[in-house]
Image (cartoon, rainbow, N blue to C red):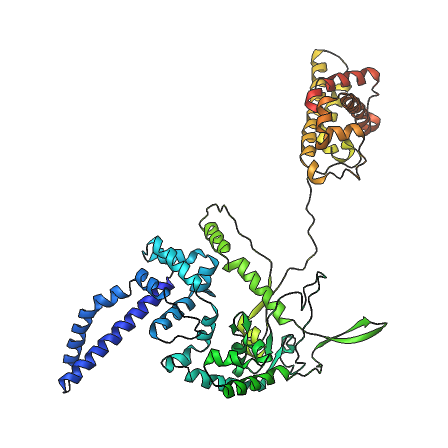
Length: 529
């Protein structure tokens, strides 16, 4: 596995070494006051590099560098003011796994951070310190830095370029509309309706607007999507859109360090994307007639993108991004036992809007690219090999094919013209074999008793309930009346079943045969108990 942390720190060290060499060379060149040929320049730079290389490598030692950078206190700032703070923003924003940053991994207790740092031979004590220090930093400024990283780097960490970009974004916001149900997710050709629907919390059991926390979306041209990203930025756990709605100039002034007039202009410009609604429907939108108030209303069906993508975020966390999913899948791949286990949601249908151009649909669609449809199929009934009887054990749980061979063997013995000890032993052997089959089936039925027994609906005779149901275990052990009835029932069932299976070929069995069968059954009383 490639170590993104190592690559990042090595890249910074290489850049620092290169910048230091160039800076020292410029000093030497300036002091010499004369031009230096290419060969001499290479020699001087090599000497400078050799002299400072060890110092730079020590400064950028993985554990020491991380501990030093993560120890900084931003003091509530949302933008870096120097190189060290920029290093902090970059390492916290570093993607160590797909859509998992250094900061989010530390916050979630994800094992990937420990694995990557231990791979760099960072001591365990230092690893723990680094993770705890990363947790202390506010994650909100990282999104600001990520959005304005290009402006900050080109302006040497000055906010002038950031303010110029916000000026431009505020002007472009008039081309967009904040929505909750983007029409383009139904058909990319839909220009309207464009509106934001809100509702109150109601514990009615439905996943709907108001009941579930969902982010807003934006209907805007693909080239202006940065407007959506900007108003989606969180400040003190609320998106900037909320401060714009409330015309909170003080927050804007404090956050970006601008005068009141500038903040007021921005807020007024961004307000246009909130009020720029269009509630017309479109012929490409699915229409349904819905009964209401004794009549029908024509409703346009739209996709609640905030709910849809919130669900995707949760599923992705369960399936891939959570610490348990990471560890569990890794152990499964290595064919090792996972004590904690992990959860997964299978059989998902992936839906994509916009094809190769998801930017053209909406802000959230561009951010998430795809969403899921949960499996919507009727339940699969589990086939039961053993079914707990509802009326009678012998007719419902003991199938004829399990004992047919035994009765055929008995019939052959009954047909024999002579009677001797071997014939009688063969008959008793067959009868004992039948009782053994009943006992085997008895244990199988008892095993599913707690899972399948529905005592209220059961029509089993009392002695069979005592025999088969675990709830009657004490009566089964202490009483004998039920066992007498069961043994007599087995003897009678044996004769009736023989006559039924063999039909007209069956020999008529009398009371003496029934008594002999009962004797064989009584020999197994404790086994039946």
